[in-house]
Image (cartoon, rainbow, N blue to C red; front, side):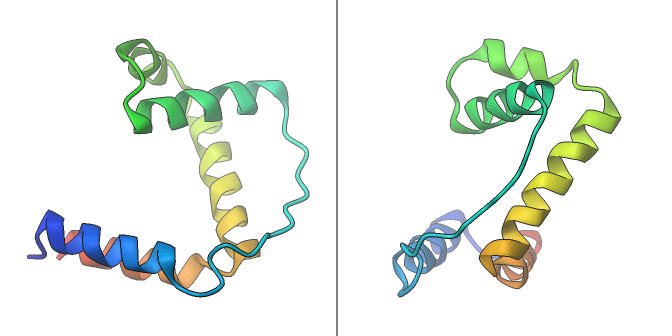
Length: 93
């Protein structure tokens, strides 16, 4: 099992690697509901208050699936889908 400090080091290294600061063009049209939900997910993930976490409990399954699809499409367009899967593999070990 990988330790959190080791995973943190790997993640920081990946974020500093060449090409990670290159711009990626993402052309999406999202409805306002998805934008609001995405904001709540990001705020909760960054730990900006318990209100956001409570709001996440009310996200319907179909809206959560739409957010997952959006993030998946962003990863694909940025060429980071495989890297993300490998990082998830490190976490689950």
